[in-house]
Image 1 (spheres, rainbow, N blue to C red):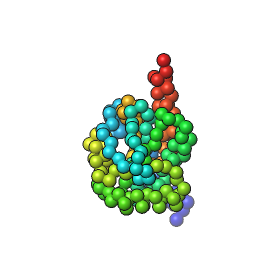
Image 2: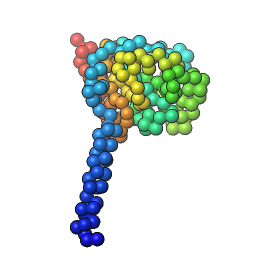
Image 3: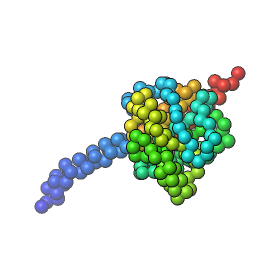
Image 4: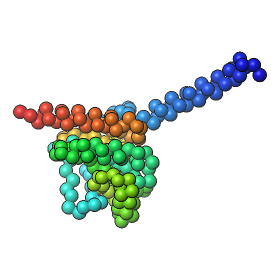
Amino acid sequence: MSLMAITQHLRIPLIFFLLLIIIGIIGCEPTQNQQTQKHIGKFVPEISLVPLETSDAALVLTGKITLLNFWGTWCPPCRQELPGLARLASRLSGEPRFQLIAVSCGGGARDDLDQLRSDTAAFLTSTGIKISPWADPSGETRFNFSEAFDFGAYPTTYLIGADRRVIAIWTGYSPSVETQIAQAVARSLKDFSETDSP
């Protein structure tokens, strides 16, 4: 077979392969798409969560910039994303106007709280991730978010303003998501400071 014949023979598969790579990269990139964009500015529904580590933690959204993340120990993209969210929360640990609420979820609509607590503690210990995890054992919060924002994939992260309105939504994970989220949080805290000052 001549070089020209080989080149012609490989051209179609190569073009197809490159097209698949481009589609895969675009499809894996969590961005503000039309599906998530339509929910920006909506009020967050009621949240009914249980702390997995402490029994006296109070959950308050109003007056804080909140990063609400639904994740699972069973979910590979969640396990990739969570360390970045924990680093961000650690950097902002002295910022009283910010909070990370990381909701550990089982694979079903309802979760066995004891099993979830055990799996989450084992995962956080083995990875050295330092967060205070929450749970939605009844599935009520996930149901409310599904109804309000079409929630249905893990990980999904909501940036919520001090007025309980959605600022941004990320569904899925890519290596650039940590930077996207950190920049959006920084902008939100800056905007919050400007509206809060006399």
